[in-house]
Image 1 (cartoon, rainbow, N blue to C red):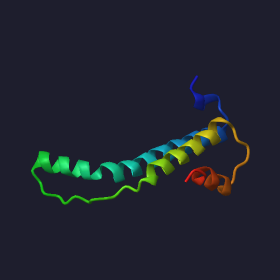
Image 2: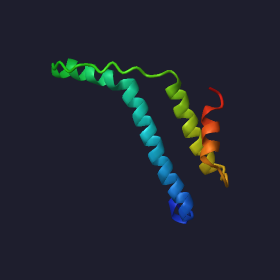
Image 3: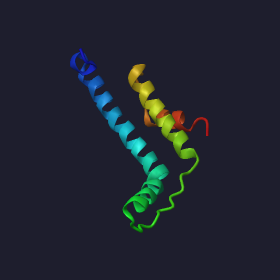
Image 4: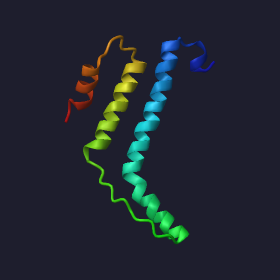
Length: 96
């Protein structure tokens, strides 16, 4: 059976919210990293002249993204019973 059929409601909610967390964070990373590439490719293929955005991706951003996703994964799979916003901030920023 799939994981969402027998699991209690809080676990289902955590997986659902975590799925949105992953999609949102990877979308933000993709925007910063690949938007100029998509615009320039579209300009070459379609013959248009849209201006590039020249967005600079901070070097720490992919690292923070991976730390946030790791916290979500640890919190949902290892069944941590209690964590606060302070625990989250310490986990994400510990190695900066």
